[in-house]
Length: 114
Image (cartoon, rainbow, N blue to C red; front, side):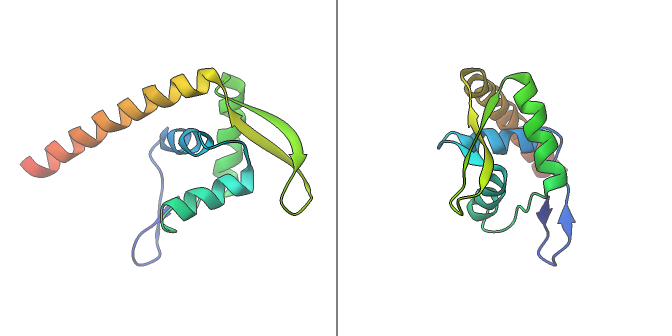
């Protein structure tokens, strides 16, 4: 979810979270909380993804073979599940990015002409 300037939240378009998570995982394996924090950091705190959205997304993408997970130790020395991008996930990221660019262009066209 993201926030409007007044603090209200905006729901992410379906599939957008997949794109964002895949993109963040290009840099290397991260556990769920670190993924959420990285999205917030990269968006300058505009995107705040809650656990109720993030973990179902991660499980769904793992089931599709886009990411894989393994247990490791977090920076706090806690046991955590780390997610990493697979070859199929990298290919899907390309598809998702192209789709997002087409969507963005279509919305821009409507906004310019309406």
